[in-house]
Length: 191
Image 1: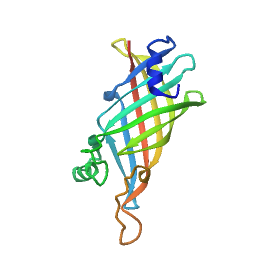
Image 2 (image 1 turned 90 degrees about the vertical axis):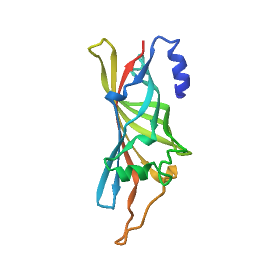
Image 3 (image 1 turned 135 degrees about the vertical axis):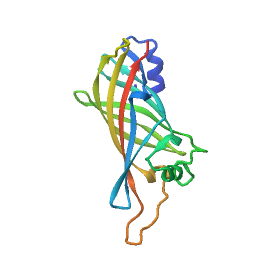
Image 4 (image 1 turned 180 degrees about the vertical axis):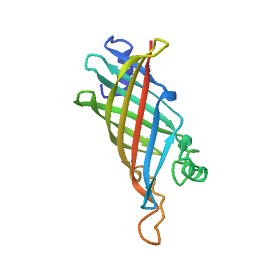
């Protein structure tokens, strides 16, 4: 099921599909980008939500939707975070959310998938491909079933209109264009 809305509706009526809610307390959305051409700045988004549909027949995800609060960006440096929230970057006043919705899932090995979807940042949407590893399913101490996934991708800032930069006197630019994204997701099965 390539449409996440379709997958979510199907999970309500088809017993081989189950719905899982992302647990933000046990999940991470991180990123890394080159700075001043010599080092890497890392950051996180501290507020996000999402859910996924898991197909027990195929033993793979069938649909994923994640929404990130852009204002929750955190690089550990207050002035940089204020700048990232401004109109030069995420413009959180006008575009408070970053959204990913899957369109297709391809199995590429045991517990290894390619998740293809649409990422919307600001007013632009572009296709991204996440390299996903299914880490397993287990029961927590409260009897709830939990599933764990890790994923990575690279995106270009320019694809989303995140074009602010400065040319360095010695050559090069302040910020690289390629952003590496890392996800560690734990989801709880809905009953």
